[in-house]
Amino acid sequence: MGRSRHVGWVAAGLVLGAGACYCIYKLTRGQRQGDRGLRLRPSRSAEDLTDGSYDDILNVDQLQKLLYLLESTDDPIIIERALVTLGNNAAFSANQVIIRELGGIPIIGSKINNPNHSIKEKALNALNNLSVNVENQVKIKVYISQVCKDVLSGPLDSAVQLAGLRLLTNMTVTNDHQHMLHNYITDLFHVLLTGNGSTKVQVLKLLVNLSENPAMAEGLLGAQVDSSFLSLYDGHVAKEILLRVLTLFQNINNCCKKEGCSAMQPTFPKGSLFFLLYGEECAQKMRALVDHHDADVKEKVTVLPKF
Image (cartoon, rainbow, N blue to C red; front, side, top):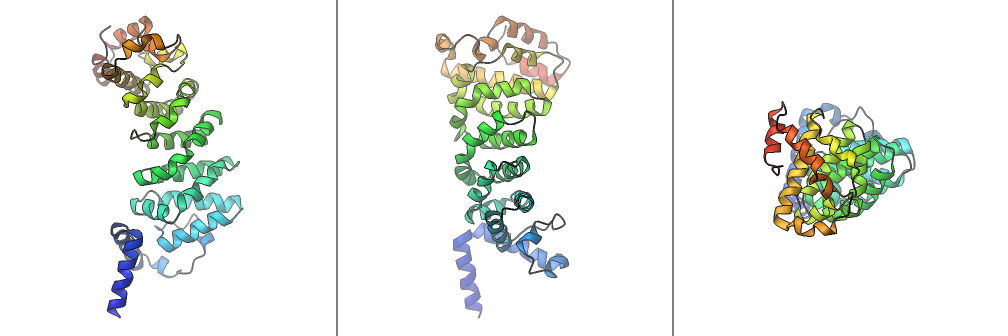
């Protein structure tokens, strides 16, 4: 009997990985010992798992049941609830692995094409949590182009747009998939300039990620950007925005030092970000920011080119 149990655990370890199995074991054991409510309802249906009052961390069997439900139902209410539950569980590193190994990423990813904006948002949120895991990003990258299109064509400042921007930001923390956004840079600057404060911050987080990669510098500097972009360098702009546009400039300037962007100047068209950042109007704004009341802003300005 003891030998059979040992063999069973070894087999499970081969399938899920020793680390994931240990986490699942600890979670399940803790629930059995500490959550009497869960022990009293061991046969909950998949629909029950989507109940907002059920906030336990799901185990492997429950996650598999929930993914099957998500794949098989057409009920928009059930779909949305299932996505919320999966998204919440994907906040835990062990479950990020389990959901991927259960084939859950394409099941969740298919819902970003749903015409229901609430379902689309919940699917993007779930993918966002899953994307924290680098191995998951390899499977999530197939949705980058679709997410970019949704971000750029969807309602401005909407929950869907913000959810998409958050996912793209996570997917560009490393350089691995940044090149997939190259064709959308100009449009992202348009969203930056037309969106509200929350949208501006989220677009800037994404652009700052891109600006840290020297391979993206030419694409950023060559983007057609409206001259109103320079208004973001005014002293009265909210600190969380101002610091990020200064960081964007700083990163691009550092990349230029490595890549020799000045030698490529003739390749940048009029109206591009290059001519905005290295023009006289921007120089005047940088000189004014030297006397900014915030120490963090002043520190950022001091490392930029001396105008």
